Image (tube, rainbow, N blue to C red):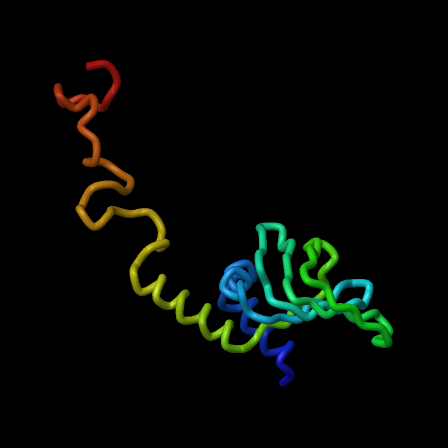
Length: 137
């Protein structure tokens, strides 16, 4: 299995791509565009539309014959065909996801640690002073 197949298989089944990219900030990555150009550099920023900012970039032409060194570049998310991040980043995201699940957050509706909150009856006393179901007091 190639690294790209590994990343595609694991990122789609266990984690969101944006969480992977946010964790990859500051690390090297390879970005291939739909037109065949590639960019190797360190990820500086990623937004919700997967627009990327890279630093210390080496751009390669689609035919692979020409190279350019760029101090910084911005890549629009809709032009990206492929991203290759180091495997250690995938491991970091997996650990973070397992810690988040272990804390119990994000597991649907329900009460908080203090016993209040959540949905259903009993949480609010509004309108219950006369034994009613709410409305005017």
